[in-house]
Image 1: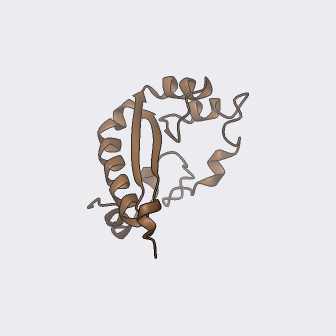
Image 2: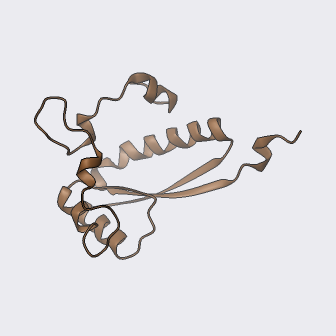
Image 3: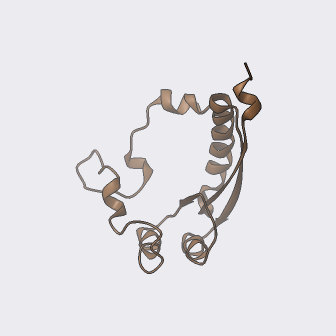
Length: 125
């Protein structure tokens, strides 16, 4: 029987994000790549593109082939819905509202992530 890892392929991803999250994504990308390798045997190389939220949105609209895009402002995300048609116009409905009942859908800080999920990525809470 041939080992499945022998058939693993290398993956290259581009993560485009707004500048203040650089340190977060440097650590997260490394942890993700390690967890992915452990689960699938595939090597993931994650390239990083960082800049202002609007600059990143404009780059993606203009053709930057990002696999993951993290932006700071809903306005920048909305810009990607219009003529660009890159995401659904009702993108906010895909995310849960804040547990405090405020109705906020902006930011991952509103989403509770359990420590087991983080640890599975090699991140300790």
